[in-house]
Image 1 (cartoon, rainbow, N blue to C red):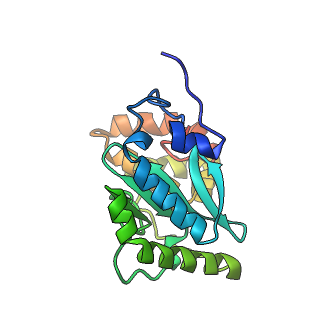
Image 2: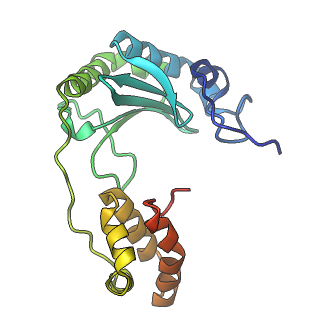
Length: 211
């Protein structure tokens, strides 16, 4: 099977996909299924006055030197993800969480182009709010709740100052990624083995699932 690489040209996304999987540039690519809806989202972002670029193989929209929104397509839906969503007022409740471990609702799911059109005023409101925050330089309040560490991880950090310093420098999300992974292990021996494997990744400042 031929290897694929993430796209770097914006038009490639809408014509072929992101380049992150073997379905790239085929009829099976999710961007083909949702082509009309993705085009509608793109138009709204551009109409809002956002600059368009490619990041992580996806259309990313920027304003005031800050990432504002990202478009993505999946098998079951397509999405507009909004950065720094904790700053936004969302009275319509349009934003959903990406997953059960996401701290703040930060994206809107769609399953048709018509749905995008119907929700255009809400989408524009959220984008304009995000743009205003970018212009003002406001950022979400630091939210660093104490992470409840598995006993094996707490013991490893106590016995390895270098690891402890690196772990506490991680973002809360990256810290939680290790906690979630370790809690999925059934035995203490498995958790200890995973911690040993994770050491270099933690020292590199990465989360449990980052390459």
